[in-house]
Length: 452
Image (cartoon, rainbow, N blue to C red; front, side, top):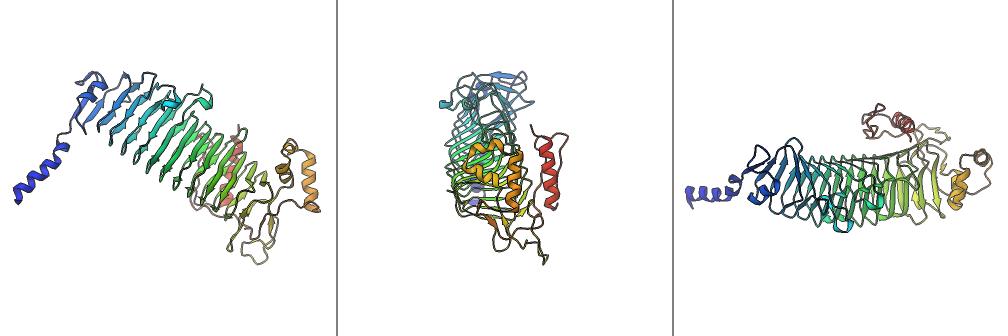
């Protein structure tokens, strides 16, 4: 081809990039409305929008960069989605987006994604039904957005902050979500990465339905009905998340329903009604987690099976375990080690850090309550405490059959960096190497001091 031919070929390939234009919208720009700029733009152009309020729904039907300067407001029509993205490879950055429609069945959203490979960055979505809705939309990045729903609506009438349906390989990072129904709802969503988000004041912080092979790490879920709900899903891995102050009627830090092969490591599960709830959870592993100051640390149906708990710190929970049925279906220690329990009163004669006396995992009254739920009315009564003390001194009721045969006499050091999720004056941070006992005490005190 020769050098001249090669140069011309490369120039032809680079042509669309070299010809990409910047279109400006606003008083100083060539366009007064964003809709006009979209109609005039060529694929891969950038549309810069000056500060101001711009009315009307938008449709990105060609690959464009839509970028706000000084946070302009896109105010939707109040019907449908404020922004619908139908072309692949779009970017929406730097806007306040508000006033979507109110139809759940129509997926009315702040941003509705119907294409692949888009970036949604640093937007403020408010007064929207769904925040960002992925409809058959994969390989997108959603980062740094603030999403707030409609708090005056009942929970069932709200949409999710981020809703992913029938999509894969998406990345959700560094967003803050509140006042919606579920913070993040995934259905038939695979290989999604969820990192560094803060989710609060809603129903479920993170909700998987029929969604396999997902990872969520370094997120904070607090002041919700449940921190996370993992349902009908397999191979979910989650690390270094905090599930704090999820309280109310039937509230949980983490809820599992009919799921398999999950892995939980280095998480903080503090000050929830139930720390971990398991129904039909199978072959999953919980290791190196802090489970502290919950009313019930672990609540499980006997449908759960073959789950392993090792090297976790169970600190100052009102009850370590409640079984609904005959058995927890769990292994509470491996050959190497069990877990640390703050209520353990055994001894360690050889000083290897493993108690010489197995720990029977039960609170007698909680065991009875599992079979007779109305007894919860008397949970903190003098009669219940006297019954527990008498049973410890002179066991006459069989109670739990669950044992940790290798209980740890010292807390396990955890790779956790924890802060008060509300970020208020009580904020406290902990280094990776901080001994778990100090970490546990600090987190428990912090959580109880901020209970509602």
